[in-house]
Image (cartoon, rainbow, N blue to C red; front, side, top):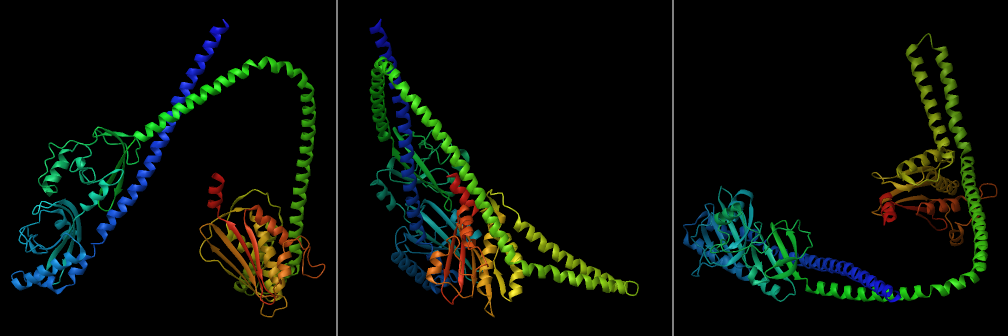
Length: 597
């Protein structure tokens, strides 16, 4: 029975190893297919760009030719043999210099007036090309493009056409024929099969000769009629050309291998929107299958070996049980130590919470200190409207019966003073409340406006000029409205303190936006700071003010707040040249993207 049990266990492990090998092989095959698809996609992008570059270098030819007087004379006087001969020689020269296959000039009825091959047996001169789509498109829209087999030469090419408006109602079309077949020779040397298909799915350029002039999928009646009318592929019989693929993939991004010409290939396609073409590349998947088989074999053998090892360990289980008795004492000691560590952790958590509360209280104290520094200006801001209200109401009482219009005006003036005091009190209440600590999207322009409104009275009191340069709208940042206001108020108060002795004191707030962050600077023209002060400016209780004018915690607290919001606070200063404080905060969408990643 023991031997039978061992056999059953071995068979179970063998089945499990086969299952792991199969799943691992499938995953490895899928990974290799995706890697091959990525390689093909990169190659497709390069191939598409090389094709576009090859075409773009000839797009300038119609514009150049349009400016030449020989072309305009041939159009306006087609019966003048000398003018036509000059145009022929000119087009022949342009074709030779530019490397274009052919250039020819059509009148507004579609008949070739002049051509670069005028002295060859296959001359285009006198041929009617009005049936070609590139002629109709140029006459209707000003430009056209078309790929097809030449009805005169029997050689394929890409046709670029452009309408020439010569004035006086004289119109013509200049056509450039480009030979793209040299690309096929390059593709034949590559490790992947490359081709280009038109809007109807017909492959007209290919490094694989068997694919040339074959449809990707079965052609419908409408596609056949369109090909016949345009004579795009003159001389090709599509009745006998069978489709390369039995069915269309679900999308251009499909990564399932297909059977093509007796080979299993991964086929990828990339659209060329401007030309309405598709660039196609295919690569064999045999390597991916070999990699999957190798991975499956390695995983199967590894799993089987691991299972045998587990079985050996299980057999030693009885020996381990005998030693468990000896380890119970050790477990009890570990349990006791664990309880002690848990108690220590709780103590540390409580200490951290207490520290956070102390820090919040310190931040609030610094905020109240800032309010104290502004108190004189705030009292002035409130007492001045009160005095004006008292005088205005007295005047209203005296003139109430004599001048109703004047009394109403005085009452409205009093209401304006009341609104001014309410606005000041609202900002003070908002600034003095404690922040919740929750990070939310914050409008920095609103923070700047509120901070400036809070310190405006201090600036007026000392006669300093306080300006703001915030073009456009700022994107939101992640933070807390009250704490960010505290940072800006602290920076503004420090700047105003620095310009107290300056008769032309000025503080400028600027805000700019980058793709990653919102940057706010507070710059003054005060006494500035030396290198030693810049090095210590973020240290707690460091201050250059006279004793009793501050706690020396404003900058340290501001730096802590900005760091909590994943930003930076930086100072630049020099003695006698003023100080510039720069706050950089990441944009909310950037911060959310990093958090999601």
